[in-house]
Length: 225
Image (cartoon, rainbow, N blue to C red; front, side, top):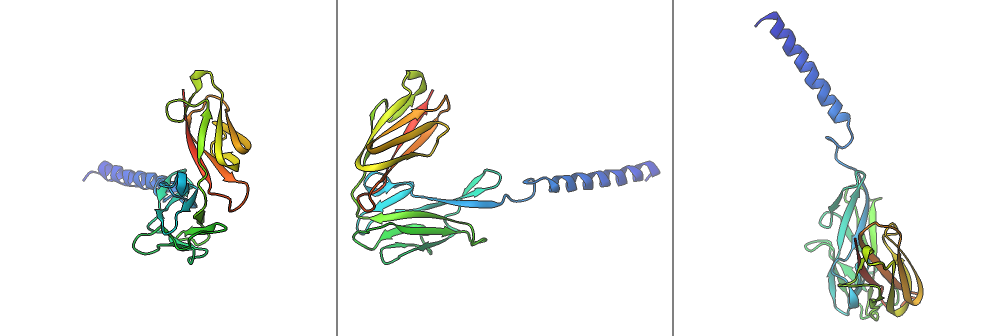
């Protein structure tokens, strides 16, 4: 092997090591993202079973919770099978932490206050997510009273800038996407108003103003161009 070829191979080896070291120093290239939080939801809960963020089980009823991990690179991952599930009162609402993790079951006939279900990270006990669960409360049905078309859709191009919502129980009104819509209201009437031209799904939540008077209700509004 010539002296030139030997030098070239040495230089190439150093270059490869330098590139590898640089890549490893870049956050997220070889380093796994860091878990920063856990969000617990009940995707199948709506109507008489409460809302995705506050399930209301019927007596003896069950539902499946989902624990979503939120990471520092903005990615998410379903962690339902790896987190540790627990209930603040398993004599009223139990949660499966073995063969069907995240499955909640109503043990009590009714509850006077919400039972907290917790999903705790298996690798860091300081990172957890919670969700309130009630049993046997009256359903809080939320409907779009005016301004919506085609299945709870609000089109920005329609000229409507707001919608009116109603609930069957006097509630406090909130929304999960203030960059798309602002939500306000008292009692059984709520109003959602467009902020600008941003589109997407907005979950509007009606939480009964009196504890124990009913379940949390919700409605998804589809904002389109």
